[in-house]
Amino acid sequence: MSEGVPPDRSLADEPQSWPVVDSQDLHRDEWVVAFRADTMHRPEHPDEQFRRLVVEDPGAAIVLAIDDDERVVVVRQYRHPVQMRLVELPAGKLDMEGEDPLVAAARELREEVGVRAREWTHLMTTYASPGITAETHALYLARGLEDVDRDFDLHHEEADMTVERVPFAELLDAVLDGRVADAPVATAVLAYEVLRGRGRL
Image (cartoon, rainbow, N blue to C red; front, side, top):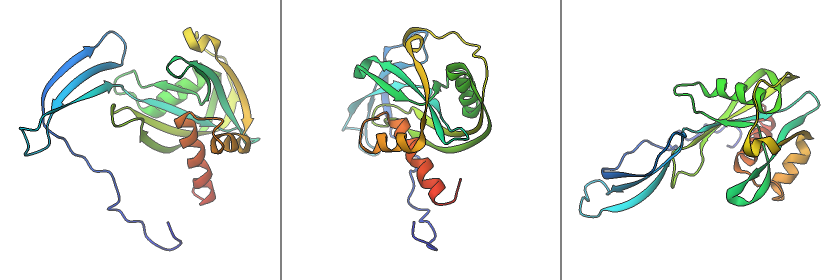
């Protein structure tokens, strides 16, 4: 946005719902994520039906935790779908119905990396991949960090996870040159860089 120019409020996503004539579960179990197929059509075009696959996912809270030395708490974790050990931020599913994403963010920061934060700022909430899921990512900035005991046992991929603190400038460079490609990391890091550059943090 240019200096002194008000934002164009009409430039925004808008709610809309197209008719769904049939919905079929393809996979659903005790976990929070499910997979379904919807048969739908454009409004006022009922004869033009088509099918869309939908992943049901409650969303996640993701934490950009930065300490007093401007270092970011990151985890390195194996992700099977991409067969990569990714650099990520502490994060977790919103798998408790009705839970405030901020509460989930604080819980995940403590459980995953043994850190508590005194100051929290909501950076933004984004859609993860809206062509196939309504999953959202609630991104938070956490400051005023202190180490605490973990009160959660890590399993599966998380049992092999490592935690470290890296300078923010180094993480920003790694995002910009493609060495770190996790989307929530890139989004949170770039949002923080832009917002503090504009004096909003």
